[in-house]
Image (cartoon, rainbow, N blue to C red):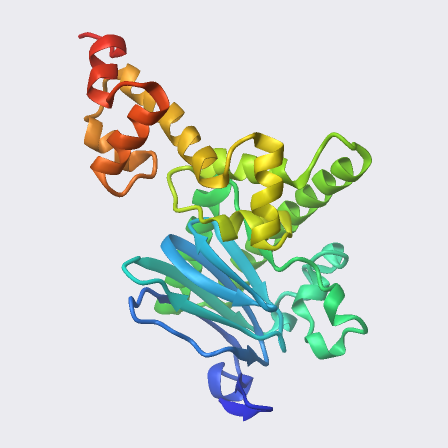
Length: 301
């Protein structure tokens, strides 16, 4: 580690072993507050649980489970805990040459993210480094990360090959997510009725059980938070928080009708941290309390 132009600079020689420049580790500290820093190597970050803050390329984003980043060499970023919020993040540090040959078919999407930012003619044109992994693929990603960590810790014969194979699989999943996002952007650009707000709405429906701050919606829509708030209300007729809560309450109503969980359990399942907040929001949306709704609409055994 050294200092470059006032910025903390993590160098390969002090962080990664020469014979196999790769490392995987986890952060879960409630007091974590990294300074802005840059790496000489590539880093992948994946949020396993909870909520934390990630600053990257001048943007500040509260991130939760399923959020994934590729931090390009030479690009400043930092991770920090958010007060009273637990979290766990998996970090992978590696030199790109470990997987360059296997990833040649994906040069248009992944290759720019595996280069040093200083080597690019237009650093500002770097692809979006952030992805949200859909719920349907989160378990696959998390299993790959666990497989990589097990190989790295046990270091049995051939562990380097096993790690590189799983790392390539992980990067291919990311490549496909990037391509999917590009396809959606092309459709949106050719269909005037579509709007980035639709992508934010989809994200809310997929992740209502997580904390979803307005800043995260703004990041997804690539808008400043204040402007995003205005556009979101214009497009949906509701402010951002009310829309998120409406999605949660609609899901809660479905769960209550099934009569398989307690009211408290359902409140936490749909994203409320306090029972009183859940009851108050539910009554505001439906006109009755969750208990009253259960008596009327819950299945009887």
